[in-house]
Amino acid sequence: KQEVTQIPAALSVPEGENLVLNCSFTDSAIYNLQWFRQDPGKGLTSLLLIQSSQREQTSGRLNASLDKSSGRSTLYIAASQPGDSATYLCAVNIYNFNKFYFGSGTKLNVKP
Amino acid sequence: NAGVTQTPKFRVLKTGQSMTLLCAQDMNHEYMYWYRQDPGMGLRLIHYSVGEGTTAKGEVPDGYNVSRLKKQNFLLGLESAAPSQTSVYFCASSAAGQTFQETQYFGPGTRLLVL
Image (cartoon, rainbow over all chains, first blue to last red):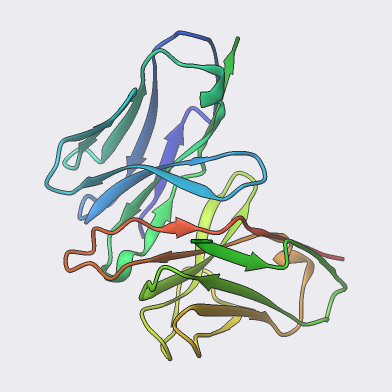
């Protein structure tokens, strides 16, 4: 069974700092990996999707990398802002029909 | 486009009561999913559907039933609610891409409290 782990569970940083969130998974036979953002009391919003054949994806200040062989992904956030405060979840898709296994998330707090 | 909507937003049930959660999407997506989110455990897949009239079990299907009578709707039923089903329930949908590389779109969630 696929296990997805996110470290750290919570992170507090001052505004402007660059930071890295980590995601690890136990089964490297994945179709893709996705990073989501969840604001309190809200649903999930997709940030980046990395296909199994890709090494990284970028969107604005966000950069996600994928190393399938070691079962790891990182989400890099540059020049963090208070508006980045949210919970970030990674999810891996190992089956057909886009079924995802989720990590428990990293709760990020960016202090002004 | 409303995207994915869920009804109700919040509900309190007594043990043994039944209820149905409704999910609707207006993106003409083939695939739909029901997840539950519990503190410290991330999201876990309950049931999913790959098209109208089809359903399949996910990771944690016990105690739940689903139906997909119309493409745009996916219903999650609790026949006899238990306190262990207290959770936040999320519905999601995605397109049926050829390479299964499609993102999922999530609804805002339903908070369920079973007393």
